[in-house]
Image 1: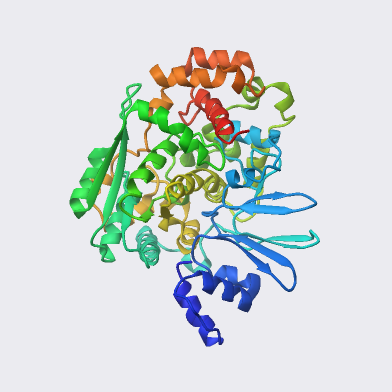
Image 2: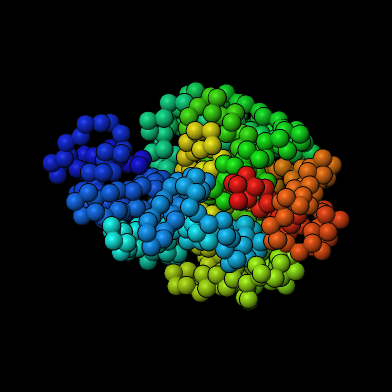
Length: 513
């Protein structure tokens, strides 16, 4: 809870006495003073549970953007909860039965399974910005305590690009500074893109001297470069950071993937999971806290599908065509009949989300979906799982709720130009070198898992065709087709359909399911 000193002062005025210097005691006494009304006062990342001894009620809550996870298994006899799904599995009373609707989401919505579902029918996630109260008899109540509305306030209707730029920069500065509290050894996961580079510049501004930066690179494959060191090196040199480059070869990826999948609460297909896992292993040798640029693309329209949605006569169809991994027909041809949902579950979810009030512009509908659903159950979960596997605390300034709320008020016309993130890039120009701002957008590239070939393809083939790993999920003819031409069957987001199936099998195996 980054603003715990201010809350502590507020509670001391109310008569509370404190015996520790951390945020946990503030959280407990804040709940005693304000109950659920404490939640909007909190600025931070959290999932917590409080047992009220006298009333025999449990109160659990999760932060606005779901930065911290909370998994639950609920029957008519008991409620179990944990920060990770694998922890719940250790209780040995969780069914290994998969949820067909969640499987539909996994295979279509780019491995995003929106809360409360998980791939396991017997495990749920408490949704972000939600609290739940349950008593000893099993009676429960659940409430969403924060929502993200889109569109400028009345007094912001005439603001210019420069006005928004200044507000975004000020808010980002505050988000970086408050996350710097009580952190001694701080690092930044430096990709060399505008987001992580801006964090380095702002950390220097707030006086961090011994700043460590970390970048990772992989072997080239399929004609695709496996690192972006030229840009991360530029920033590291510009700010004189203690820079660390990590180069990973193909054999080490194969060797470490099982461990990375054991650390996943849910299977993730994004190639940079292994990058974050191995990078976190390296970072943890030098520091306990790292800042990461997650969220900037979803908040400020950095992805290529936002202009497509903005100009579409059917925004939902444009989003689905750009982001979804499969059509419903192809999904039906991928799974065996007993797992097939009778309707386009993931598509229906997105269509209904687009239809909800609170976001009028087409691009805002896509941004809201990505910021409150996709971001939570893909990039944010990915970083949290992979860093926590090594005891590393990842702080994400762009997900400061004040900056998130501000970003939602910025009109699309100030986000979409200049390849996306226009207003954030203009803010960054006041801090960091232009070379990393005007470059072509990059991602954490792991070419070996995108262009499956050589030893990696052999390993994936064994993973999918081993009789002991056959769970009756996928049609053999689809597996044959994908294994015959893995490079020719990529998703619209240029991901490997074959890897998606292999990743699910690997996760289930590593979880003992």
